[in-house]
Image 1 (cartoon, one colour):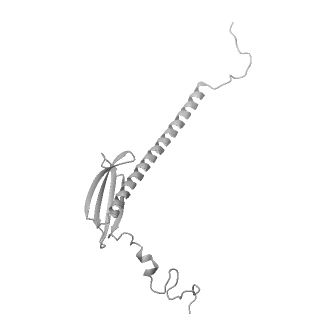
Image 2 (tube, one colour; image 1 turned 30 degrees about the vertical axis):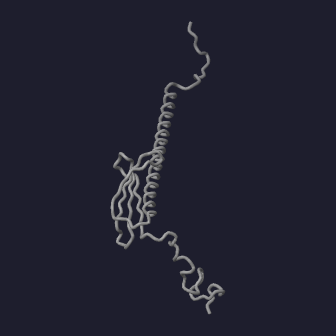
Image 3 (cartoon, one colour; image 1 turned 90 degrees about the vertical axis):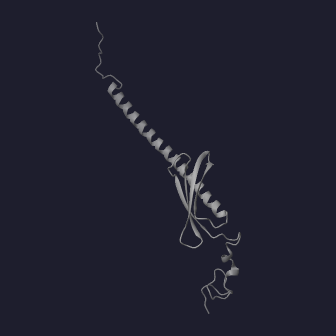
Length: 164
């Protein structure tokens, strides 16, 4: 004799179809989260590489400025190790059309790659005597009787805006 259920309550729990649908939804959700995380990691690495390349290019421009000589119109390149990676840089110095002002373009890439990661442009002017760059801003270079912050023609001790 077989045993039958005597009560008319439905069986408790999930059917196999419901479990399979729930697992499929969970798998799709996890795949989407994994893809989003992968994109964020790639974006962070790309940003880090562009930042390092920018720093390398800015350092090369600073080196040219600190040499304190009139640069020659030319192209140059070299390799550098920075942040544990091997980089290559290419600089191009050109005239701007303004006397004694030169444009410097520095492109940075990885050593075995032709793809430029970052290009930075700077300008180099005529070299100056060290320590003499702010002469124009000292009070001794103002016309006699004028002090910084005063209107031209005001006498010392006058109230600001008061004309005689």
